[in-house]
Length: 247
Image 1 (cartoon, rainbow, N blue to C red):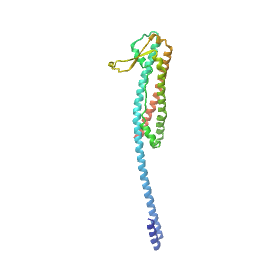
Image 2: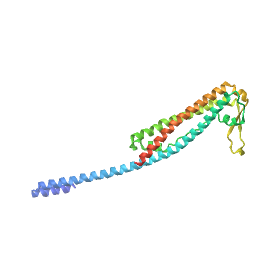
Image 3: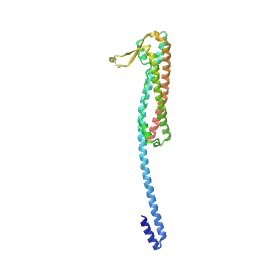
Image 4: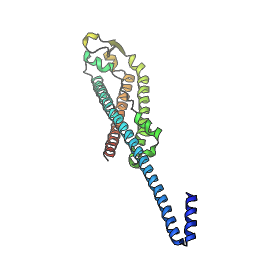
């Protein structure tokens, strides 16, 4: 190319046509620059298209994970609420001096310190971290997702540990006053555990038992309140992801 320019220059100069040479040279340079710019623009467009495809794929994965998480969280809240309500009823029964033992109490006693668990789905978030958070263009949504997975879900994990510790702390105390019975599988209840009191009248007067039961009941309620707040954040994040996908 340089050799060609030199030959043209020499020929034009030889003919005394310097101005025509300059115009020709400038025109050639402009064409080369424009070609380079167009090539760069096409390359940038292709790269941007690839990144948007990856972003959409990650958002879809996050949306699917959250859909599962929301179902599981609602299930946990529902189960824990039922257990908590049973314990509230049990406290009232034990505090009532007129209450006599009834076999219908056995299921409540069997579930006295049970709890449900929640394990979040993280495939989408792991893919996001692996690809790099900068793949998400919406900074507000990015911050919301990071807060949910790195902070809120970490707190849920801690609450699971607290539930387990609360179970361990009260299990021995409750088992000293209760006997575990396994139902016959023919009852269609399967092998769910029920417990019967060793002495119902003595149980009603046992301050240690009542103290741990009321403490457990209050803590159960606190867990449920917190889980409901987390559920709202999950639902909001999912809604925002869906809106981003529509765009």
